[in-house]
Length: 336
Image: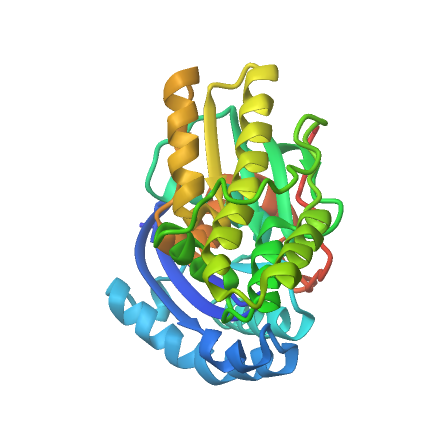
C-alpha cells in the first residue's frame, strides 16, 4: 500500500497530510492567523519561526491519525514554491531530511498546482476543466487540458482578488483576514446595489485588475466615513463587483474554449456570494461546477499530496537531494 506524506509551509499555515493511493487518510493544520492579526498581514520572520515550532509535533500527530509509522511512508511531497522563503525552507528541509532517513523520493510541488488539484480530494473531475485559482497574491484562469498540461489564459496585473479583500478591509477598519469578514458583513444586510462600483476589465479577455476598484472603494469610504451605517452597503457593493468580474471571466473562458467543467479553488473560493452566483450561472448555462470544501480551499497539505499523486510522472524526474525552494515559482506548463 502506497502512503504519501505531504508537507505545506509556504506562508502562514503549517500543514501535514497522509494520502493512501491518492486518497486522504489524515490531515493536520496549524494556523497562524492570530499571530499575524495585530500586524494586519503576515510577518515573514514570525511565520518561519512558528513553522519550526510546530512542524515536528504535527508530524507525530498526522502519522498517529493515519494509523501508520514513519517506515510506512513510500514517498514525500512538499511545497517548494511560490511563497515566503523562510517558510518554504522549513518544509523543504524537513522533507529532505525525512527522505534521506527513509530512502524515499521527495517530490517538490508547486503550491498553485496544489490548489488546482484540490477539487479532486472530494470530486472525480476529469480533464479537461477550466479553473479559477484565487489564492493569496494570485488570481488566474487556468485551462487544465490534461494532468500536467496547464494553460494560463489570464492572471492579475496588480492586486489579486484576495489581496483586494484584505486591503479594503484594512482601509475601513475591519480585522485581518479581510475575506471572511467582508463576506459575513455583506450577508448580514449590506445592499449590494447601493454603490455602482466599476467592474475592471469585465469584457476584456481573461486578465484581472483590482487596484482601481480598491481606490474607488477608498474614495467612497472617505466621502461617507462619518456615517458608519453606510459601511455594510459599501462592503456588499465592493464584494459584488469583485464577484461579477470573477464569474464573468470564468464562464467566458469555459464557453469560448468548449470546456463544460468549471472549478474554483483557493481561499476566495470560500466566498458565499461567489459560490451562489456561479451556481446560478452554471445552472443556466449548463456547466458542471466544482468547489473544494472550505477546509481544502485554504492552504493545506492534502492538496499538495493530491497534486503530487496526479502529477507524479512529471515530478519524479526532478525528485532528489538537489530540491530547493523557488520563491517566485511559475505554474508548471507541459506542452501548454
